[in-house]
Image (cartoon, rainbow, N blue to C red; front, side):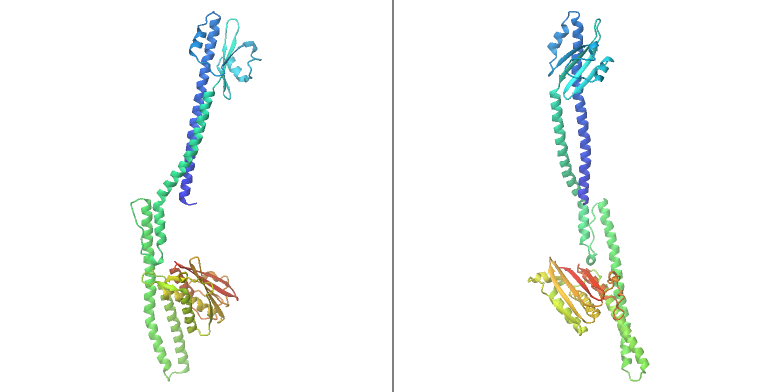
Amino acid sequence: MNIAKKITLLFAILSAIIISLLSGFVWYFANDFAFEDFYKRLEARVNIAAEIRTSEDQNDNVYAKVRNQYLERLPDEKEYVIEKNKIGNPKIGVDLPKTFYDQIKEGKIARYRTENHFYVGKYLAEDRQSHIIIVSANDPFGFRELKDLQKILFAGFFLSIVMSFVVGWKFSNYMLTPLRNIIKSVKKIKAENLHLRLEVRGNDEMAQLSQTFNNMLNRLETAFETQNNFISNASHELRTPLTIISAEVELELKAEDGSIRQRQALSKIKDESDRLEHILTSLLGLAQSGFNGKTQPWEQVRMDELIWDVQRTVNQVHPESKIEIDFSQLPEDEDQITVKANLNLLKLAITNIVSNACKYSNNKTVLVTLESKLNVLSVAVKDQGIGIPPGDVQHIFEPFYRASNTTDFKGYGIGLPLSLNIIRLHRGSIGISSKEQVGTEIKVILPIN
């Protein structure tokens, strides 16, 4: 779940909690006010009924006239008068709880409600006989208003949740837009364009984040250029004395006056100087493949033609090698087998892989397969060689690392790391599958677009 969805969900949950609490308060106080108001109306009728009963003893009906004239009759309103000595078995048509009568005995005005039917009772002490007066009535209007209020609160709750989701989504998208812009800009920055920088606007946290990325990119670019310049300069500077040494050794080897021992020593020096020159050349290739790519030419390269060139190159260096090429899976559209690449570097990467396959398989048949699927080109190089021990596979792309079973083969541990750097420069990837004494398959994946 991304941050925008988390913010939206959290915003909706908080809104739901707040709205629920607010609706609960509204419902509670509306409910309490409606019941309290109706109870007071019943209490007024109980008090008037008590006064009427007292006045009737004096043959005065003034309270009855006032009640009939000024008080509306409530729905299903009934009045009960119970003698005190009959409280234990009152006949009023409904069973009221004992606590109701206990409150009356204590001299309080008792209240009781069952659904929308309300009861109010009061103790009336007279000279000859004490009574309890109970008035009951229904409150359909109040209950209907509460039901309507309940529906409104529920509808408002769900509508508010929907609105909170919409508002939360808009709000989160608005707040995260600067962060998305930063992510989009950072994704565009690769090893080949480390000179790019993020745009810094304002002085808020997003601007500080952009500036932090820019500072990091400055350090990375400096480190890249320092490393590559050092390797390039060192390679060039060391190659000059090596060339002189090789030339002098070749001259001495051509001389007739040297002893056999001297000639053996000179041959050894010549072999080691050639080896050192090859290492320096590979180091220079590593430096070039790891550079930013701005000074290297890029062009549209057909991979099928490149594979044929690789075969010719390997056959020239190793005439005894056997390379089979499989183009049976290629589409007819040539755009699906064309990539934008640096021709020389990409050819060097594929050549290193194919050359290794031939060397470590003792020149058994090596199969090179080219496929194009879903805007991706894959070059699979499969040999029948010595394979790679399981513990060495994870280190095979480390510079100068050689597998433990390659002691009988000449090599410097630079070819595959160089190929990996070149493929990464082309935004591709390399996968490897190997089984000892069975063979190795290396697959290069390159994006077409």
